[in-house]
Length: 445
Image (tube, rainbow, N blue to C red):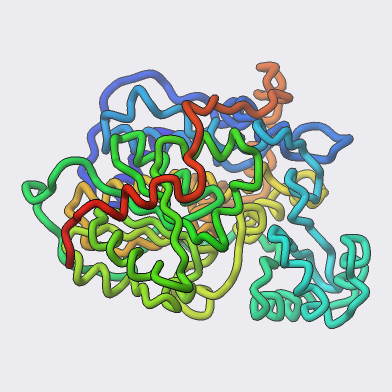
């Protein structure tokens, strides 16, 4: 399945693909269990649960596609499946049933359906009274009691207006979903016009975007991580080793966007070959940074936009994180159909899956001459993986789930905990390279 998925990804990008004989792919049940994601899925007091769709094989397929596009990665890139459990391994997270391993996302029953409510940011709770129109919901128990009396669709609509990550727990979409789209086109350049390895300006934070630039860094790209001095990457406050795994070796630039930071950011963008950002489109537009304009005026630029639901209105304004995006793509509904219980699948599963896919989109776009604004949505990437070889009938899906569960147990890997790589070094402190990077003289538009 991993090789088939790799070929499908590359063909969807317009590549001509050949296949040579090689070692067989690992069975999707074994990759799910060995990644530690099986141990992260299920009730605290229940057995680890098998995912009935080959998410880990898809992750391995992306890694295989990356190695095909960038042969230098062959000795440097671990299994894509193992990357999906790294955060949980480092932070010591455990499965928690209908609550995400991190504790920020809860599956809650509304009056007429189930919701994923992800209060991942410190200030999200401040918006809860306006969302539920009550001052009483100050804990998860109180919040759940209020949600149980309300209409699900109304709650989702109101949450999205307030910037909260809330979504309905629906069945997977059966209509084809693309894993990426080209939101704007500019001017590509010929390979002969490229000078050296690409310069990547990474404006993203947390997991998906930094993993994308980390993969590009593994190909030899130079990565400049740009953060706001007043609102740096929230992952800095999390598990230190996880932040170091993703960000060591990058250069850190910190800017004050309330003063002269925007001008300095524009200077960096003028030198970039690849830009990665993972914010809602209006966030950068408010700073005067219009991705569509940069694609036109900077020949050869590849701009990668990672969002929850895409760049188009109104979905472009919806907030989403890794756990709730997995629910929106149908993972919890699938597990409920098979186990009878509403469960969170893995740990923020959409983040590392999207980060891997984004790296392929970025590297492929750059190798093809750039001139593209490539959009990836967390929900769409997971939906694309869910749809890959998805059985058409419930009976087939149940049979697959039973067979895969038996295969993992028979191999003795069903309780394997997630694992993580050791950091190769410390990530730079906030703004450690600001003066040196801004002092460089680069090409200007």
